[in-house]
Amino acid sequence: MILMILITVLGNSVVCLIVFQKPVMRSAINLLLANMAAADIMVGVLSMPFTLIALIAGDWLLGTVFCQVHAFLYTICVMEGILILVTISVDRYMIIVRRKDKLNTTRAKVLIAVTWIFSIVVSFPPFVGWGHLRYLPGQAQCRLVSAGPADTVYSLLLVLVQFFFPFFAMLYSFMRIISTVRKNSMRIMNQPECLAVTQSNRLGLQMVQARARKLNVDMSFKTRAFTTIFVLFIIYVMCWAPYAIVEVIHASWINTKEVRGMVTFDLIVLWISYLNSAINPMVYCWRIKKFREAVRELMPSLKFLPRLPGRVHRRIRPGAMYECNASETSTV
Image 1 (cartoon, rainbow, N blue to C red):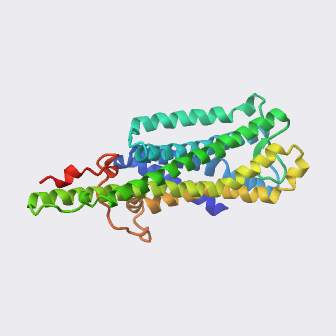
Image 2 (cartoon, helix red, strand yellow; image 1 turned 180 degrees about the horizontal axis):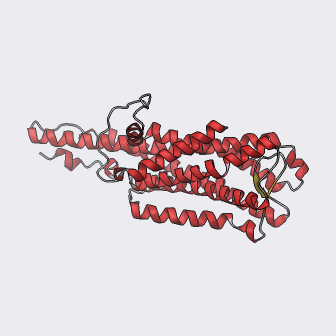
Image 3 (cartoon, rainbow, N blue to C red; image 1 turned 120 degrees about the vertical axis):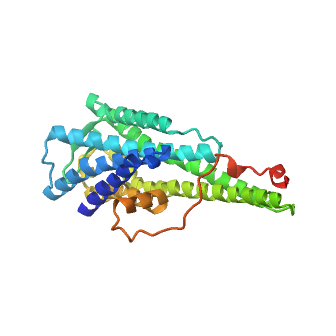
């Protein structure tokens, strides 16, 4: 558990440092990833250590007020991380399915501000009497507790907003993305004239080869970028699905004696959900070459990180991989 806390805080701190220290890394997507890393840092600093202390001590030792603040901040950070992942997924959907690449750094900053505000608003109702934040013996965490029908409604709404709505939104986006990529890959494969050399003229040969390289570059970049987000989505589901199910059970179960019977399971799913914050920076380093290179520059001793073959330049425009214009390829 201590190792998980260290990886969460240090790993995500490195991600934030890389993005804000290197101007070349301040793309719209990287700003969103850095913001998600910041939310994970807050989980590692404001939630994990106090949960560990309560677990060791067998009780909450830091008072009622901090208990409520602790649960409030944890809810905000979790909500923020999930909203950013949804935002990135929708951005991939807009680029690949809708062929619109409108996310720039300015819009990314606006989205970050909006998601933080939304996260605070969604987490605030317990302070106005809709839901109760308190510590339940043996659970090692201050949490939302349902003390009546109104509390149950809020608890269920919070689970829907934190997990089920984002899950189905991202699932739909990824299904459409996969379908679109497959269709357009088949379209390219079924039109060999787009890649075939039809003229012996030297200039024509150069034009056709350039077109082929462009298609290959765009296909490789988009596929890899989408795969990275998809990996983050799978990890998110694996880490948070058990926690969401337990939260539904807690929201539906008023009797605290029955809830206490799930103490061991509660602790397991809680630390599995924490694991998400520790894994995310590893995924960035594993999947994103620029992050790997920046980590090597920041920490030259990390020679164990694998070196992957260099990748050619980024796409020229969002819709490039989806077009196959025969007139371009047949021109001399």
